Amino acid sequence: MSKAPLSTPTLPDTGALQSPCLTAREAAAFLHLNEKKLYALANSREIPAARVGGKWLFPRAMLEEWLLEQAHGGALTDRLLITGSDDPLLSATVAALAPALGSDAFIAYSPTGTLAGLELLARRRASVCALHWGGVEHSAQQHATLLRRFAPHRQWALVRLALREQGVILRRGLAVDGIGTLAAFDYRWAMRQTGAGSAHFLESALASRGFSVADCSAVATAHTEREAAALVAREDADCAPGTRGAAAEFGLGFLPLGWEAFDLALPREVVFRHLFQNLLSAFGGPAARALAGRLGGYDLTPLGQVIGLD
Image 1 (cartoon, rainbow, N blue to C red):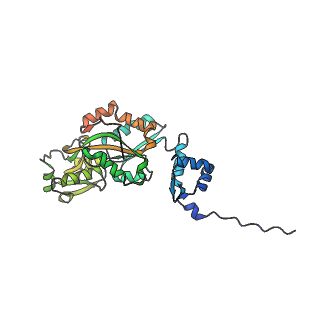
Image 2 (image 1 turned 90 degrees about the horizontal axis):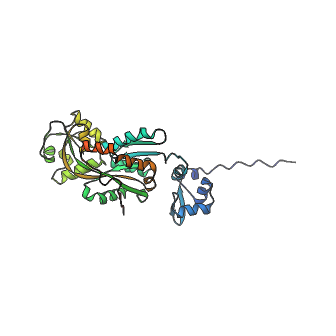
Image 3 (image 1 turned 90 degrees about the vertical axis):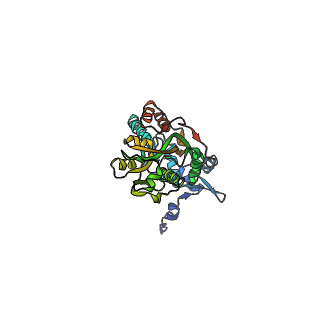
């Protein structure tokens, strides 16, 4: 009896494997769910999904992160990665909280500037983004407008940490009567990178007085608030945009220009996690409030306030 020819194995569709999105059938198989349950989760917005042309599509990378999110002690629930704007009080709070958590959770702070931080948040590379963008009087509108540049903003919340005094950090012994003097004469500036909230505040302050950043003699670019202060402290520059808190941390002078809101943008599901609530409690605790008083330029009254994005 002749043997039946061996069948050639069917190779998987490499195009489908590389696709960033799964169909409902593929997603159900991936999650080991029946399609009815999958549709229920999608309709209730409990799972990452988008309806395109009447059909549900499921982003593969976000499904993998969603699985981690659901797992007990998962990699997303026991970590808090903070990026965005630099701040000495937030840095000190994270530094004190991390050893208190021990090996139970991981919290870290890597400042990148406001816009770069929001991009990392949008790409789910960070849990929280610290941001500031303009004066306090228009901060709610400006911050909401800023967040709308990023596709996932509808899933984000905005939580206020503090109000901060923004201005120009001055080298020791430098006394000037205003920002116009710093712009008009040959003072050496350590400028912040494009997309930093302090750079945006400086540009607005200069423009309101008839100057621009081009009028200033830039000798260095600092990528964090504290790097800018360090450049001035080493006298590699005479001045830099930044907060009163950053200036005080390095024992430097300060030219005030106004107050701003310092907020945290984060996915809504992160807001009520114990780790984030621990951060807010520590930021408003006695040690942080004492440090805020010593540095100056902080108002913690609005701590924890949720800012509407509509």
